[in-house]
Image 1: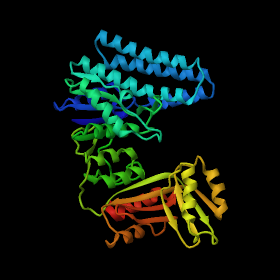
Image 2 (image 1 turned 135 degrees about the vertical axis):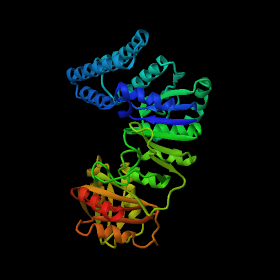
Image 3 (image 1 turned 60 degrees about the vertical axis):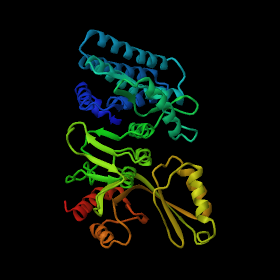
Image 4 (image 1 turned 60 degrees about the horizontal axis):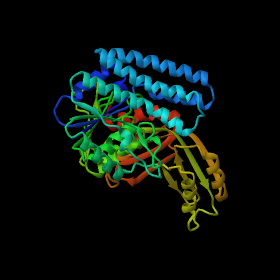
Length: 439
Protein backbone atom coordinates (compact mmCIF):
# COMPACT_ATOMS: atom_id res chain seq x y z
CA UNK A 1 0.00 0.00 0.00
CA UNK A 2 1.05 3.57 -0.73
CA UNK A 3 -0.02 6.75 1.06
CA UNK A 4 -0.11 9.87 -1.14
CA UNK A 5 -0.66 13.38 0.17
CA UNK A 6 -1.64 16.33 -2.02
CA UNK A 7 -1.55 19.89 -0.73
CA UNK A 8 -3.91 22.78 -1.35
CA UNK A 9 -2.20 24.05 -4.49
CA UNK A 10 -2.30 20.54 -5.97
CA UNK A 11 -6.10 20.47 -5.70
CA UNK A 12 -6.74 24.22 -5.80
CA UNK A 13 -8.31 24.27 -9.28
CA UNK A 14 -10.52 21.73 -11.06
CA UNK A 15 -7.83 21.04 -13.68
CA UNK A 16 -5.27 20.34 -10.97
CA UNK A 17 -7.66 18.05 -9.15
CA UNK A 18 -8.07 16.14 -12.41
CA UNK A 19 -4.27 15.91 -12.70
CA UNK A 20 -4.16 14.40 -9.22
CA UNK A 21 -6.65 11.78 -10.38
CA UNK A 22 -4.29 10.87 -13.23
CA UNK A 23 -1.35 10.55 -10.83
CA UNK A 24 -3.09 8.26 -8.37
CA UNK A 25 -4.37 5.94 -11.12
CA UNK A 26 -1.03 5.44 -12.88
CA UNK A 27 -0.71 1.96 -11.36
CA UNK A 28 -3.00 -0.58 -9.73
CA UNK A 29 -1.43 -0.52 -6.28
CA UNK A 30 -3.85 0.18 -3.43
CA UNK A 31 -3.58 3.71 -2.05
CA UNK A 32 -4.80 5.99 0.68
CA UNK A 33 -4.90 9.53 -0.70
CA UNK A 34 -4.70 12.38 1.81
CA UNK A 35 -6.01 15.77 0.65
CA UNK A 36 -5.70 19.26 2.05
CA UNK A 37 -8.39 21.89 1.63
CA UNK A 38 -8.53 23.73 -1.70
CA UNK A 39 -5.88 26.46 -1.77
CA UNK A 40 -7.15 29.61 -0.11
CA UNK A 41 -9.91 27.85 1.79
CA UNK A 42 -8.16 27.52 5.15
CA UNK A 43 -7.20 31.21 5.07
CA UNK A 44 -10.84 32.04 4.31
CA UNK A 45 -12.02 29.85 7.20
CA UNK A 46 -9.54 31.52 9.55
CA UNK A 47 -10.96 34.87 8.45
CA UNK A 48 -14.53 33.72 9.14
CA UNK A 49 -13.50 32.58 12.60
CA UNK A 50 -11.77 35.90 13.31
CA UNK A 51 -14.87 37.85 12.30
CA UNK A 52 -17.09 35.67 14.48
CA UNK A 53 -14.68 36.02 17.41
CA UNK A 54 -14.92 39.80 17.02
CA UNK A 55 -18.74 39.47 16.91
CA UNK A 56 -18.72 40.99 13.43
CA UNK A 57 -21.45 38.80 11.94
CA UNK A 58 -21.78 40.99 8.84
CA UNK A 59 -18.16 40.52 7.89
CA UNK A 60 -18.38 36.79 8.62
CA UNK A 61 -21.44 36.46 6.36
CA UNK A 62 -19.69 38.31 3.53
CA UNK A 63 -16.72 35.93 3.78
CA UNK A 64 -19.02 32.89 3.86
CA UNK A 65 -20.90 34.11 0.77
CA UNK A 66 -17.65 34.70 -1.09
CA UNK A 67 -16.46 31.19 -0.26
CA UNK A 68 -19.79 29.70 -1.37
CA UNK A 69 -19.51 31.44 -4.74
CA UNK A 70 -16.02 29.98 -5.19
CA UNK A 71 -17.20 26.44 -4.49
CA UNK A 72 -20.26 26.77 -6.73
CA UNK A 73 -17.98 27.71 -9.62
CA UNK A 74 -15.52 24.93 -8.74
CA UNK A 75 -18.26 22.27 -8.93
CA UNK A 76 -19.39 23.40 -12.39
CA UNK A 77 -15.85 23.05 -13.77
CA UNK A 78 -15.04 19.79 -11.99
CA UNK A 79 -18.10 17.67 -12.71
CA UNK A 80 -19.90 17.15 -16.00
CA UNK A 81 -22.91 14.91 -15.29
CA UNK A 82 -26.09 16.43 -13.93
CA UNK A 83 -26.54 13.86 -11.15
CA UNK A 84 -22.99 14.33 -9.79
CA UNK A 85 -23.30 18.10 -9.97
CA UNK A 86 -26.52 17.87 -7.97
CA UNK A 87 -24.86 15.55 -5.47
CA UNK A 88 -21.93 17.94 -5.11
CA UNK A 89 -24.27 20.90 -4.72
CA UNK A 90 -26.09 19.08 -1.93
CA UNK A 91 -22.76 18.47 -0.17
CA UNK A 92 -21.78 22.12 -0.43
CA UNK A 93 -25.21 23.28 0.78
CA UNK A 94 -24.89 21.04 3.83
CA UNK A 95 -21.57 22.57 4.79
CA UNK A 96 -22.73 26.12 4.16
CA UNK A 97 -25.83 25.45 6.23
CA UNK A 98 -23.40 24.80 9.07
CA UNK A 99 -21.69 28.12 8.33
CA UNK A 100 -25.10 29.78 8.52
CA UNK A 101 -25.64 28.30 11.98
CA UNK A 102 -22.32 29.76 13.17
CA UNK A 103 -23.80 33.22 12.57
CA UNK A 104 -26.56 32.51 15.09
CA UNK A 105 -24.70 30.93 18.00
CA UNK A 106 -21.99 31.96 20.44
CA UNK A 107 -18.44 31.66 19.23
CA UNK A 108 -15.90 29.55 21.11
CA UNK A 109 -12.67 27.69 20.35
CA UNK A 110 -14.44 24.37 19.81
CA UNK A 111 -16.67 26.00 17.18
CA UNK A 112 -13.60 27.54 15.55
CA UNK A 113 -12.03 24.09 15.18
CA UNK A 114 -15.26 22.86 13.57
CA UNK A 115 -15.07 25.74 11.11
CA UNK A 116 -11.44 25.01 10.23
CA UNK A 117 -12.29 21.35 9.50
CA UNK A 118 -14.77 22.18 6.74
CA UNK A 119 -12.14 22.75 4.04
CA UNK A 120 -10.74 19.21 4.10
CA UNK A 121 -14.21 17.71 4.43
CA UNK A 122 -15.39 19.51 1.28
CA UNK A 123 -12.30 18.89 -0.86
CA UNK A 124 -12.26 15.14 -0.19
CA UNK A 125 -15.97 14.72 -0.85
CA UNK A 126 -15.76 16.60 -4.15
CA UNK A 127 -12.67 14.69 -5.26
CA UNK A 128 -14.29 11.35 -4.45
CA UNK A 129 -17.34 12.35 -6.52
CA UNK A 130 -15.09 13.23 -9.45
CA UNK A 131 -13.33 9.85 -9.28
CA UNK A 132 -16.64 8.02 -9.15
CA UNK A 133 -17.98 10.06 -12.07
CA UNK A 134 -14.86 9.02 -13.99
CA UNK A 135 -15.62 5.35 -13.39
CA UNK A 136 -12.81 4.89 -10.84
CA UNK A 137 -13.37 2.54 -7.91
CA UNK A 138 -12.83 4.93 -4.98
CA UNK A 139 -14.41 5.64 -1.63
CA UNK A 140 -14.27 8.24 1.13
CA UNK A 141 -12.40 7.21 4.28
CA UNK A 142 -13.45 9.68 7.01
CA UNK A 143 -10.40 10.79 9.00
CA UNK A 144 -12.56 11.78 11.97
CA UNK A 145 -13.36 8.10 12.50
CA UNK A 146 -9.74 7.09 13.18
CA UNK A 147 -7.43 10.11 13.61
CA UNK A 148 -7.02 10.84 17.33
CA UNK A 149 -4.86 12.98 19.62
CA UNK A 150 -4.22 12.33 23.31
CA UNK A 151 -4.39 14.57 26.39
CA UNK A 152 -1.00 16.06 25.48
CA UNK A 153 -2.46 17.05 22.07
CA UNK A 154 -0.12 14.57 20.38
CA UNK A 155 -1.29 11.93 17.87
CA UNK A 156 -2.16 8.60 19.52
CA UNK A 157 -0.46 6.38 16.95
CA UNK A 158 -1.47 3.09 18.58
CA UNK A 159 -5.14 4.07 18.67
CA UNK A 160 -4.95 5.45 15.11
CA UNK A 161 -3.48 2.13 13.91
CA UNK A 162 -6.15 0.12 15.72
CA UNK A 163 -9.07 2.15 14.35
CA UNK A 164 -7.61 2.44 10.86
CA UNK A 165 -7.17 -1.34 10.67
CA UNK A 166 -10.86 -1.80 11.45
CA UNK A 167 -11.90 0.82 8.86
CA UNK A 168 -9.76 -0.73 6.14
CA UNK A 169 -11.60 -4.02 6.57
CA UNK A 170 -14.77 -2.23 5.44
CA UNK A 171 -13.06 -1.18 2.18
CA UNK A 172 -11.02 -4.28 1.36
CA UNK A 173 -12.31 -4.30 -2.24
CA UNK A 174 -11.70 -0.58 -2.88
CA UNK A 175 -8.19 0.21 -4.21
CA UNK A 176 -8.42 4.00 -3.75
CA UNK A 177 -9.44 5.54 -0.45
CA UNK A 178 -9.67 9.32 -0.07
CA UNK A 179 -9.24 10.89 3.36
CA UNK A 180 -8.74 14.25 4.99
CA UNK A 181 -5.43 15.67 6.10
CA UNK A 182 -5.03 18.02 9.05
CA UNK A 183 -8.25 17.19 10.92
CA UNK A 184 -8.75 14.76 13.78
CA UNK A 185 -10.64 14.31 17.03
CA UNK A 186 -9.07 14.94 20.40
CA UNK A 187 -9.27 12.71 23.48
CA UNK A 188 -12.60 14.39 24.42
CA UNK A 189 -14.13 13.37 21.09
CA UNK A 190 -14.22 16.96 19.82
CA UNK A 191 -13.18 17.94 16.30
CA UNK A 192 -9.60 19.19 16.40
CA UNK A 193 -6.61 19.50 14.08
CA UNK A 194 -2.88 18.89 13.75
CA UNK A 195 -2.28 22.62 13.14
CA UNK A 196 -1.02 24.29 9.96
CA UNK A 197 0.85 21.94 7.63
CA UNK A 198 -0.78 19.02 9.37
CA UNK A 199 -1.72 17.16 6.18
CA UNK A 200 1.91 16.03 5.84
CA UNK A 201 1.70 14.80 9.41
CA UNK A 202 -1.56 12.98 8.66
CA UNK A 203 0.02 11.17 5.70
CA UNK A 204 3.01 10.07 7.75
CA UNK A 205 0.81 8.90 10.64
CA UNK A 206 -1.44 6.94 8.28
CA UNK A 207 1.59 5.45 6.54
CA UNK A 208 2.99 4.32 9.87
CA UNK A 209 -0.36 3.05 11.14
CA UNK A 210 -0.99 1.05 7.94
CA UNK A 211 2.67 -0.05 7.64
CA UNK A 212 2.64 1.34 4.11
CA UNK A 213 5.37 0.52 1.60
CA UNK A 214 5.87 4.20 0.77
CA UNK A 215 4.63 7.68 1.65
CA UNK A 216 4.50 10.31 -1.08
CA UNK A 217 4.17 14.03 -0.34
CA UNK A 218 3.07 15.86 -3.51
CA UNK A 219 3.49 19.63 -3.63
CA UNK A 220 4.25 22.31 -6.23
CA UNK A 221 8.06 21.99 -6.03
CA UNK A 222 10.29 19.17 -7.26
CA UNK A 223 11.64 17.92 -3.94
CA UNK A 224 13.57 19.52 -1.09
CA UNK A 225 16.17 21.98 -2.39
CA UNK A 226 19.68 22.64 -1.17
CA UNK A 227 18.69 26.21 -0.30
CA UNK A 228 15.58 28.37 -0.11
CA UNK A 229 14.51 29.00 -3.76
CA UNK A 230 12.41 31.96 -2.63
CA UNK A 231 15.58 33.75 -1.51
CA UNK A 232 18.42 32.25 -3.58
CA UNK A 233 18.27 32.01 -7.38
CA UNK A 234 20.59 29.04 -7.91
CA UNK A 235 19.28 25.96 -6.10
CA UNK A 236 18.71 22.32 -6.97
CA UNK A 237 16.62 19.43 -5.60
CA UNK A 238 18.41 16.97 -3.32
CA UNK A 239 18.12 13.37 -4.53
CA UNK A 240 18.45 11.65 -1.16
CA UNK A 241 18.25 12.56 2.50
CA UNK A 242 18.31 10.55 5.69
CA UNK A 243 15.39 10.83 8.09
CA UNK A 244 17.57 12.83 10.50
CA UNK A 245 18.73 15.26 7.82
CA UNK A 246 15.19 15.82 6.57
CA UNK A 247 13.90 16.35 10.10
CA UNK A 248 16.55 19.02 10.74
CA UNK A 249 15.73 20.83 7.49
CA UNK A 250 11.98 20.69 8.07
CA UNK A 251 12.26 21.98 11.62
CA UNK A 252 14.63 24.79 10.68
CA UNK A 253 12.62 26.26 7.88
CA UNK A 254 12.32 24.05 4.77
CA UNK A 255 8.67 24.79 3.99
CA UNK A 256 8.07 21.80 1.72
CA UNK A 257 7.66 19.43 4.67
CA UNK A 258 5.89 19.73 8.02
CA UNK A 259 8.48 19.41 10.83
CA UNK A 260 6.59 16.68 12.72
CA UNK A 261 6.00 14.48 9.69
CA UNK A 262 9.28 12.56 9.77
CA UNK A 263 9.14 10.57 13.01
CA UNK A 264 6.14 8.29 12.25
CA UNK A 265 7.74 7.19 8.96
CA UNK A 266 11.17 6.92 10.58
CA UNK A 267 9.79 4.74 13.38
CA UNK A 268 8.89 2.02 10.88
CA UNK A 269 11.53 2.80 8.25
CA UNK A 270 8.97 3.79 5.60
CA UNK A 271 10.54 5.78 2.72
CA UNK A 272 9.09 9.24 2.10
CA UNK A 273 9.18 10.76 -1.38
CA UNK A 274 8.76 14.49 -2.01
CA UNK A 275 7.28 14.92 -5.50
CA UNK A 276 5.95 17.68 -7.75
CA UNK A 277 2.32 17.59 -8.91
CA UNK A 278 3.18 19.97 -11.76
CA UNK A 279 6.08 17.72 -12.90
CA UNK A 280 4.94 14.21 -11.94
CA UNK A 281 7.87 12.51 -13.70
CA UNK A 282 10.54 14.49 -11.82
CA UNK A 283 12.55 12.33 -9.41
CA UNK A 284 12.07 14.59 -6.39
CA UNK A 285 13.66 13.72 -3.05
CA UNK A 286 13.74 10.33 -1.31
CA UNK A 287 13.95 10.33 2.48
CA UNK A 288 14.97 7.01 4.03
CA UNK A 289 17.35 5.31 6.47
CA UNK A 290 20.28 5.71 4.08
CA UNK A 291 21.71 8.75 2.31
CA UNK A 292 24.47 9.78 -0.04
CA UNK A 293 27.67 10.75 1.76
CA UNK A 294 28.04 14.40 0.73
CA UNK A 295 29.29 16.50 3.64
CA UNK A 296 26.87 19.43 3.29
CA UNK A 297 23.44 18.71 1.84
CA UNK A 298 21.35 21.80 2.32
CA UNK A 299 20.65 25.08 4.09
CA UNK A 300 17.46 26.21 5.78
CA UNK A 301 16.47 29.37 7.60
CA UNK A 302 13.96 29.79 10.40
CA UNK A 303 12.60 33.30 10.94
CA UNK A 304 10.71 34.84 13.83
CA UNK A 305 13.31 33.85 16.41
CA UNK A 306 13.76 35.57 19.76
CA UNK A 307 17.10 35.29 21.60
CA UNK A 308 17.10 35.44 25.40
CA UNK A 309 20.28 35.91 27.44
CA UNK A 310 20.38 35.48 31.21
CA UNK A 311 23.54 36.97 32.70
CA UNK A 312 24.37 36.18 36.31
CA UNK A 313 27.81 35.97 37.97
CA UNK A 314 26.08 34.87 41.15
CA UNK A 315 23.93 31.97 39.97
CA UNK A 316 25.31 30.43 36.79
CA UNK A 317 27.78 28.00 38.37
CA UNK A 318 25.34 27.05 41.12
CA UNK A 319 24.12 23.45 41.06
CA UNK A 320 20.74 23.15 39.33
CA UNK A 321 20.83 26.60 37.71
CA UNK A 322 20.21 25.39 34.15
CA UNK A 323 17.46 23.06 35.34
CA UNK A 324 15.65 26.00 36.94
CA UNK A 325 16.00 28.00 33.72
CA UNK A 326 14.56 25.18 31.61
CA UNK A 327 11.70 24.62 34.05
CA UNK A 328 10.44 28.13 33.29
CA UNK A 329 10.24 27.38 29.57
CA UNK A 330 8.59 24.04 30.33
CA UNK A 331 6.03 25.77 32.56
CA UNK A 332 4.95 27.95 29.62
CA UNK A 333 5.24 25.13 27.06
CA UNK A 334 7.78 27.07 25.03
CA UNK A 335 10.35 24.95 23.14
CA UNK A 336 14.00 26.03 22.95
CA UNK A 337 15.77 25.81 19.58
CA UNK A 338 19.37 26.73 20.43
CA UNK A 339 21.35 27.07 23.63
CA UNK A 340 24.86 28.34 24.43
CA UNK A 341 26.50 28.86 27.82
CA UNK A 342 29.50 30.68 29.26
CA UNK A 343 30.80 31.19 32.80
CA UNK A 344 28.52 34.15 33.36
CA UNK A 345 25.60 33.75 30.95
CA UNK A 346 23.25 31.36 29.20
CA UNK A 347 21.57 32.21 25.88
CA UNK A 348 18.60 30.41 24.33
CA UNK A 349 16.35 30.97 21.34
CA UNK A 350 12.59 30.46 21.03
CA UNK A 351 10.18 30.77 18.12
CA UNK A 352 7.01 31.19 20.20
CA UNK A 353 6.88 34.49 22.09
CA UNK A 354 3.28 34.36 23.29
CA UNK A 355 4.45 34.06 26.92
CA UNK A 356 7.68 36.03 26.52
CA UNK A 357 6.77 38.67 29.11
CA UNK A 358 5.95 36.05 31.75
CA UNK A 359 9.09 34.07 30.94
CA UNK A 360 11.22 37.22 31.15
CA UNK A 361 9.73 38.15 34.53
CA UNK A 362 10.52 34.74 35.99
CA UNK A 363 14.01 34.63 34.48
CA UNK A 364 14.77 38.02 36.05
CA UNK A 365 15.04 36.39 39.48
CA UNK A 366 18.24 34.71 38.28
CA UNK A 367 20.00 37.71 36.76
CA UNK A 368 19.94 40.35 34.05
CA UNK A 369 17.77 39.36 31.06
CA UNK A 370 18.43 40.63 27.54
CA UNK A 371 15.98 40.09 24.66
CA UNK A 372 16.81 40.25 20.93
CA UNK A 373 13.88 39.89 18.54
CA UNK A 374 13.76 39.57 14.74
CA UNK A 375 16.48 36.93 14.63
CA UNK A 376 16.95 34.08 12.13
CA UNK A 377 18.46 30.64 12.63
CA UNK A 378 20.46 29.48 9.61
CA UNK A 379 20.89 25.73 9.64
CA UNK A 380 23.62 23.90 7.71
CA UNK A 381 22.58 20.26 7.32
CA UNK A 382 24.54 17.28 6.08
CA UNK A 383 26.13 13.97 6.92
CA UNK A 384 29.14 15.27 8.79
CA UNK A 385 30.80 14.68 12.15
CA UNK A 386 32.86 16.95 14.39
CA UNK A 387 36.23 15.48 13.46
CA UNK A 388 35.85 16.20 9.75
CA UNK A 389 38.07 19.10 8.78
CA UNK A 390 37.19 22.17 6.79
CA UNK A 391 33.41 22.36 7.13
CA UNK A 392 33.33 24.97 9.89
CA UNK A 393 36.12 26.92 8.20
CA UNK A 394 34.11 27.12 4.96
CA UNK A 395 31.05 28.30 6.85
CA UNK A 396 32.85 31.12 8.63
CA UNK A 397 34.81 32.11 5.53
CA UNK A 398 31.41 32.62 3.88
CA UNK A 399 30.20 34.88 6.66
CA UNK A 400 33.26 37.01 7.48
CA UNK A 401 31.31 40.29 7.36
CA UNK A 402 28.00 39.00 8.74
CA UNK A 403 27.55 39.24 12.54
CA UNK A 404 26.74 35.89 14.17
CA UNK A 405 24.84 36.10 17.47
CA UNK A 406 25.04 32.39 18.50
CA UNK A 407 26.52 29.12 17.21
CA UNK A 408 25.34 25.57 17.92
CA UNK A 409 27.79 22.86 16.86
CA UNK A 410 28.32 19.30 18.04
CA UNK A 411 24.84 18.60 19.37
CA UNK A 412 23.98 16.70 16.19
CA UNK A 413 26.13 15.12 13.50
CA UNK A 414 23.70 16.54 10.95
CA UNK A 415 23.37 20.18 11.94
CA UNK A 416 25.41 23.34 12.49
CA UNK A 417 23.15 26.25 13.45
CA UNK A 418 23.93 29.97 13.38
CA UNK A 419 21.87 32.84 14.75
CA UNK A 420 21.94 36.24 13.07
CA UNK A 421 19.74 39.28 12.71
CA UNK A 422 16.95 38.62 10.18
CA UNK A 423 18.19 41.55 8.10
CA UNK A 424 21.29 39.44 7.31
CA UNK A 425 19.39 36.32 6.23
CA UNK A 426 19.33 36.77 2.46
CA UNK A 427 22.97 37.79 2.26
CA UNK A 428 24.04 34.89 4.48
CA UNK A 429 22.14 32.26 2.48
CA UNK A 430 23.58 33.55 -0.79
CA UNK A 431 27.15 33.60 0.57
CA UNK A 432 26.81 30.08 1.97
CA UNK A 433 25.30 28.88 -1.31
CA UNK A 434 28.32 30.22 -3.17
CA UNK A 435 31.01 28.88 -0.80
CA UNK A 436 29.50 25.51 0.10
CA UNK A 437 27.89 24.55 -3.22
CA UNK A 438 29.78 26.70 -5.74
CA UNK A 439 26.55 28.28 -7.01
